[in-house]
Image 1 (cartoon, helix red, strand yellow):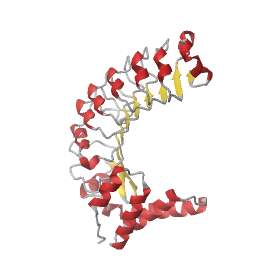
Image 2 (tube, rainbow, N blue to C red; image 1 turned 135 degrees about the vertical axis):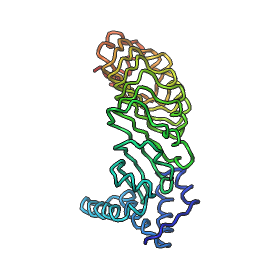
Image 3 (cartoon, helix red, strand yellow; image 1 turned 60 degrees about the vertical axis):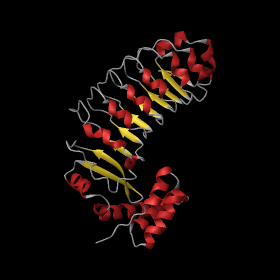
Image 4 (cartoon, helix red, strand yellow; image 1 turned 180 degrees about the vertical axis):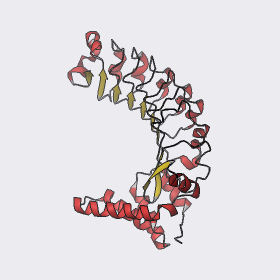
Amino acid sequence: MEKLYRNPKMEAIIAIDPDNLDPWSVYADWLLQHGDFRGEVMEMELSIHRSKIDYSRFIRITKTIRSHYRKHQHLWINKHLEKLALNDTISLKFKYGFVSEVEFRKLPRDNPFLDTNQLQFLNRISISGHSHLQELPSWISSLSGPVFSCLKTLNLYNNRLEEIPDSIGNLKQLRTLNLGSNNLTYIPTSIIKMKKLKSLVLSKNNLREIPECVRSLVNLENLYGFQSSISEIPNWIGELSALKKIYLYDTYITQLSESISRLKELKELVVPVAAINHLPDSLETLYNEKRIRFQ
């Protein structure tokens, strides 16, 4: 049976910046020296990202990687996840020989992450398309431990969620939180703890306003609230200096806040056509630069 090796020190370095390829390359060499086949898979994936390769070679390498994952993935995940994958409760995606994404096709009652072995580079969890899901399982709050430091995206799109637990705020490591297409009427104030959040999706819910707690998300770059009952853009929006994209079309917004002019990084603001009649003078430059669109 293939033996898996781990180097916690190298993994800790990688976890600081998983997008930096150099530590991955060092880890690949170390694994190969110890006879761990994941090192070969890492090197193949790294070759795709490191240099420009022609299409035919890209296809060959990709097919080889997929073949290796099909053959070896049962050895590269813990027994609990293997059981869930076999009964089609979850589907898995891998990157550099480790689980990178978990999509829940069914929702287990018990915590699927009690065994965190081989999950140290888990990047994305998706719980989407569950038409009877009105509340999240309690184990969601367990995703805040140090083992999940690389978890950057939580996708909860297109369920029937009526509320989000306060414990969601414990997931301080998230960069993207997708709450779109649910039945939410409010967002817990605990999300103010998500200081690293860059993208927040609130679209297609029953929200009547952009929640006040969003005001604290100082690194937020993308805000989506389209197809909702939101009726105004708050004056504090200008405090979110990192904002680049705001999508609020198909809402009840009829006028724009002058504070939008303070958003120096703004690339695109999409709002209802009705707001065009109340365009403040301070926003005319943004409009002329086509950074404001009416839809």
